[in-house]
Each structure stands twice: as C-alpha cells, then as structure tokens.
Length: 110
Image (tube, rainbow, N blue to C red):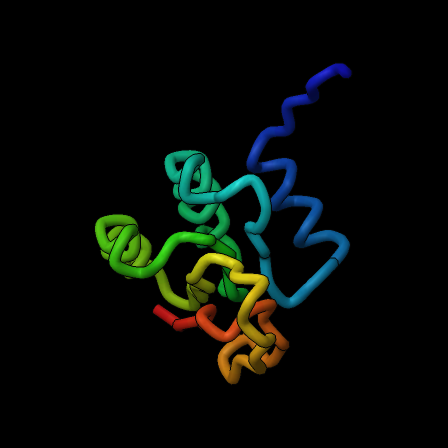
C-alpha cells in the first residue's frame, strides 16, 4: 500500500473550507506516541482556528503529565484518558457528551 503525505496547512485549509466539524479529533493508533506531530498540527491549527481539539488516548492521566502540561498552553483542548476495559460498563461523559466504552475513562478540558 502506498503512503501519502499531506501537509498540515492543506489539512487545515480543507477543514476551513468544508467546515467538516466543530472540532478536530485525534484518535486511534495512540496519538501520544506521535506527540511531536500532534503538537505541530495544533500549533498551526491555532493560528487560524479556535475550535476544540479532542485527543483520545488510552493512557492514564498520570502517565502523560508532561504532555498534558505542554498541551495546557493551548485553549480548548479536550483530553479523553483511560484504557478500555471490557470488564467495565460504559459511562456517559459530561465533557464530551458521549458514552465512553468503559467507566474508567473520562475527559477533561484543559
């Protein structure tokens, strides 16, 4: 399968043009493992947009405190933390206004 590279500026331009959403969502393939790329995107995105940036991570908050501190420099960042646990029931999250897969997960707005 061929890999295609897309410039951050092109992604942001498409977001602005199409008004695809009210937020940008980073989820899947663990965004915290590509933290430099996520930060590059957020830095560029904040130059022209104030919409929420939502990051779904499977890490627990205490495991990523250093990254949370860096993310806290930006407005309107929502961070969903906690590993999925199939033995726990789902839970409605007031911050995201959705059901999360297991009750140990929660979101915070930085």
